[in-house]
Image 1 (cartoon, helix red, strand yellow):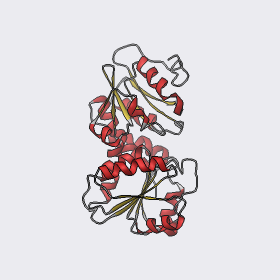
Image 2: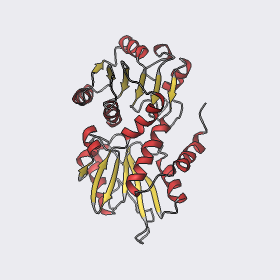
Image 3: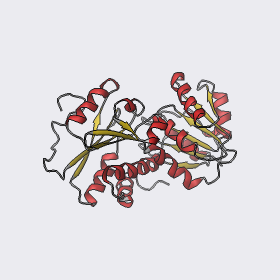
Image 4: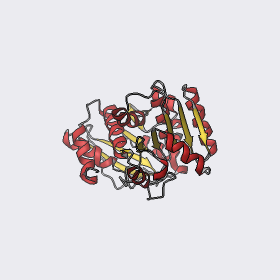
Length: 298
């Protein structure tokens, strides 16, 4: 590639037709464990594929996607902060990506970039392992980006949810996500993130709390404290590194049930792998690759 946004000049891309290159783009991206997970799967299945990470800043997305076209990238993942904007730079959207207005997986189909949303499955799979009945449930979602959109699409398929409360610093983004939830038939209500008393009250009565923001990625203090969570709550932080964020530390002290971010990473990764290859993902191999880094959480 000629531009600095996605520079593969130092990456060796084999010329034979069996070789394929995949990547993840985002900012930050240096913490990503997707290369570890996917390269382990490729190696296990003896595929001549490689997966690398590229840092792409907000104002570099268009040029970077064009560069990925130029090198005929086989597919790529999209992470913060590009998931919503990516919908404008693919040639076609899957039904779920259209519904969510967010893309986290792209497949190159004979030069056509098709955008998918595997975050929906990634978010919902670990939730469904713990919750079978959503009747009368109140849910709190932190954030208004691509992952919160995926959460709303997934939750809209569950019957009986009473209310989904949402909080985000950017009120314009929050309004758009509320509109999405409403269009999906959900009862979504915004909360002012500065109103700590109201937020704590809602948090304490919510049976499911999902953090879709990047708060915690750099060990930042969570908006929610342990005294605003109940032991019957399930707290899901999509951040996977560090594995134990401040939010999850607070949830643990409150004796709430935890869902770790690596569970979403794995599940969305399984689906991405299957979209790209048409093969069943070697789930045990991919999970072992990640937990070899983390260690099994307590």
